[in-house]
Length: 298
Image (cartoon, rainbow, N blue to C red):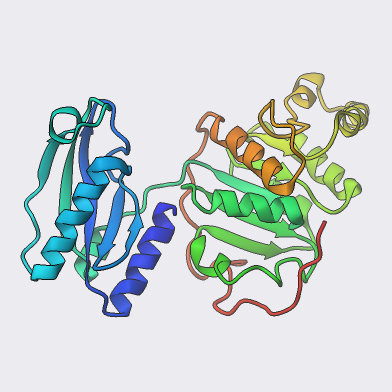
């Protein structure tokens, strides 16, 4: 669960009247499971998010739940050396802060900018798998397809699990590519090789993109290289095209295997531009009620 989704779920808990505490890593030093700013929300029988697992998280959950059961004030901040205090081998130290889940706590909860922003072109099987993987990563995704029915059969959890996901049906994916912010990563996997080429050609004219990745084989890459160079795209820029896409060494062709390899490649990219979550009301934001029809696979 990414930070934006965690905060959104915490807001739902508050709206439902559920009592809970927010546990935050207020400060961190040395080797620790999660950095400062990581949060989890602890209710009487359920938790959301994680501050790193292990004995540290178990202790924090127990502390919070005892407080909730006794209707006691929040514990004072806890400063813990993970080795001596908890027997963990990390070797670092953390300070944990506890606060009641209320409107004031949510107002103070600032969701940090995402690791990256990605434009994903194509809502076929691999695209669907990739959005599932990226939903738990602090990033934002514009998911673009030309087909009206492309997003119609998304599972219900897609509407709450990934508040930084925008589904955009567009007749002009090339225009979407050209309008994307500088530093955006682009992953091209539409239902049409001709459309793939048009998007990639447009992106190759830009010098401010992040990763430009294309799903396909080495044969597809060579054909695209030949056409791009014939259109005057510099060889050095063509060489930057990531195709086949995904980290090396992953041999599986199942949609989720490909998606994991692509997500790993995105995470390995240098941070060029940090983009926050899309704001409510922006064009393309997922509607409140999911559509009912069935998507077509690519």
